[in-house]
Image (spheres, rainbow, N blue to C red):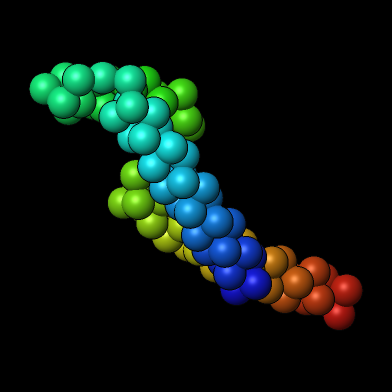
Length: 92
């Protein structure tokens, strides 16, 4: 599960970076626009910024992590089966 920890750590660092960038964007937008246009401009800026990122939802990430875990489990079962079959052939 070391790989999971590494991904989790990377994800945490990534979230912190995103939060800092978003705060900078908000400050930039607030400094450049009148108060009544802040929401409109903020939404447009964030939408454009997020569109450039190659992100997946947490749900999609969790589904893919589960698929990977099942695939690894199946591979281990097949490797064990193959070892048993090869062991049976050499013993005959």
